[in-house]
Length: 177
Picture 1 (cartoon, helix red, strand yellow):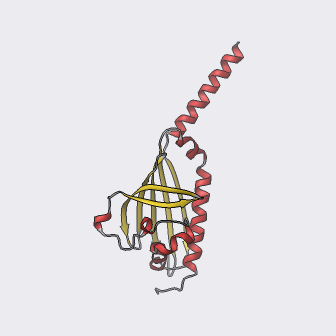
Picture 2 (tube, rainbow, N blue to C red):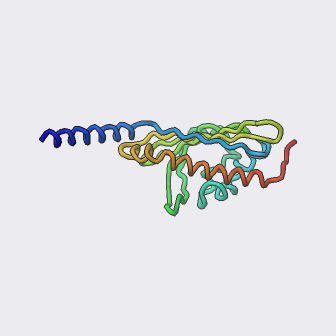
Picture 3 (cartoon, helix red, strand yellow):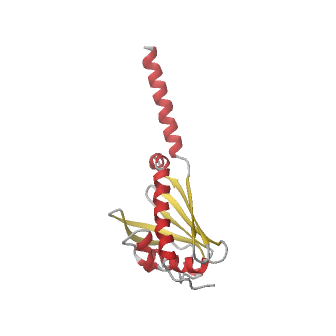
């Protein structure tokens, strides 16, 4: 009887631990050094025609067409569509900040989490730059359990995206001294 009560107690504690972990905000940061100027890196990043080459194929151009974003678009929610691993997605995107050659920040409102995507660009010596991608998710309900458990897979996926972006940028001619 005592063993059964202990098993119930330990199971309850484990479930509470998992649920409380699921309520935590998920932070993932990854960086990439690029052998091109910050201006060239930004141009490739900000060109919506390049997006399918490094992030997801099937993006609706409006999702990442921020090169010409003006102040009136900042903070205004809009619906965007794209295909992610074969699944058609439709989400609400709000652009938080666009500073050419410095940063692009936006948020998606998912049914399972509110997610912020922050891209920062920094010069790193002559004809070199650093891209830093910060992902912050506030999971909703049980979705936080898998997001916290999958943190490593999320980071690996973002690293893969940045590797593709780095290759795309470095295959561009150097346009700035």
